[in-house]
Image (cartoon, rainbow, N blue to C red; front, side):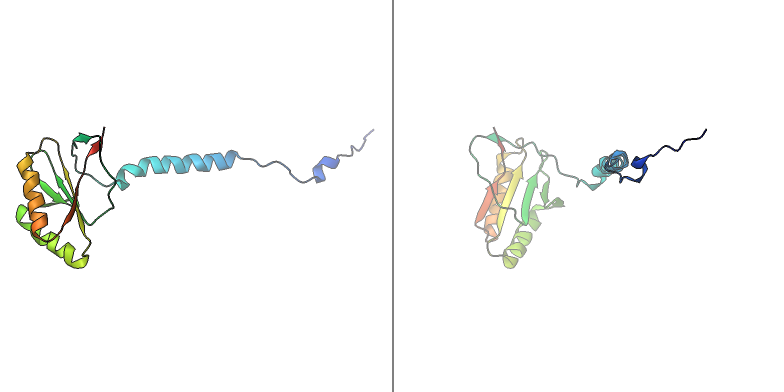
Length: 136
């Protein structure tokens, strides 16, 4: 004796969303980001900045000077000589009269080196400059 079971649930729409495939995709995307992030990050110059309690935020500029502990000078991440500082500063000033120079110097750099860079920047006509620090 065969009986027919009336199963109305087969015709009902699916009301649940299966999120397992979504989670799998998100995990794969996360792994891709974790693997590619070291390649995307820009290499930076390591500078051990001095600490100070007072300091103000500065606006980004096209003249970012960095002086490493051994006295090497970089402009926007590229190594330059002391002779090129005035030349590059004058070029930036001709493009934008409101140019500001930001100077980041390692805390072990002699004071005279920082003053020399400031003097070269100011002698090129740039009157606004900032010295980068780490907040205490």
